Picture 1 (cartoon, one colour):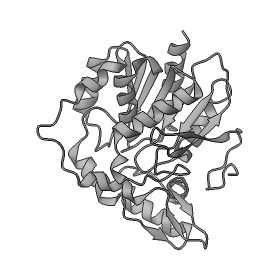
Picture 2: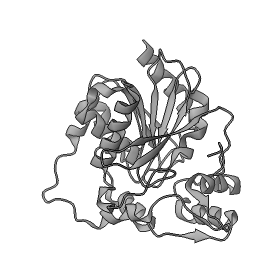
Picture 3: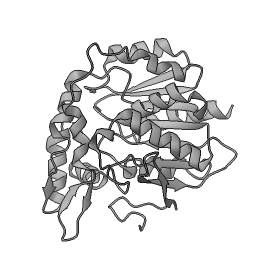
Length: 296
C-alpha cells in the first residue's frame, strides 16, 4: 500500500508488514527503521483507531529508534475476525505477543492509547520481560463508566458519509467535548485518521463494526480486582498521560497509579479529553525523558 494512501502523509519511510495471530489471522503493522542497538518502540492504538493515529509521533521518533505501529485485529489493514468475541483485550494481547515473538525483538517501549494501554498492561502481566518501558495514554486499570458508555454509544454503528467534509463534521459532533479547541482542519485530520475511502468514494470508519459486539456481554459478577494489572510494570520506567477533560481516566485513578508505580511519571494536558494525540507540546519532552531513562 502506498504510504499516506489513506490520507495521512509520511516523509519517513516505513514498511507495511504483516504477522500471524495465534488463531491464523493476517495482521498489519508499520515498521519504521531505527538504531537496532536501542530498544524499539511499539505503538498500540485505541479501540476504533489504526496505525495512522501514530503517524506524526512515529515520524518524530523513528531513525534514532525503530518504531513499530501495530494494527489490532479488525482495524485498518489487519484482517477482520470471523468470531467477534475475539475482539477482547486478552486476545489482542496474545496477538501482540505473537508479533514480538515473530520479530524476535524485545524488550520494547510500549506506547498504548486507551485500549492499546490496556493491552500493554496485559502484556506486562503475562510477559513483563517483553517491556522495557510503558507509556499509558489516558487509561488505567479502572475505566470511568461514563466514558465507557459514551464510547459504546458510537462504536460499531457502521456509519458512512458521501465525502470527507461530512466525515469531518461527524467527528466534530462526536468528539467536541474532548477537543474544545479544535477547528475545521483538526476535524478533517481526525476523519482521515479514523476513516477510509471505499471504491466509489464513500467514506466509512476504518474498522470492523463487530468490534462493538463484546460491549453487549455483561461483565463478570463479581468483577475481578483490576489493580494487579499494574504489577507487571513494577520497576520499569513509565509515563502516564492524562487528558484534563478525560471521562475515561479519572484523577483519582491516575493518582493511585502513580502511587503504585514509583517509577511512573505523569503529565496532565489541559483542555484535552479522551484521548490525547501525544502530539501536544507537553508530550514531547516527557516522551524524550522516558526514552532517555531506558537508554540509561
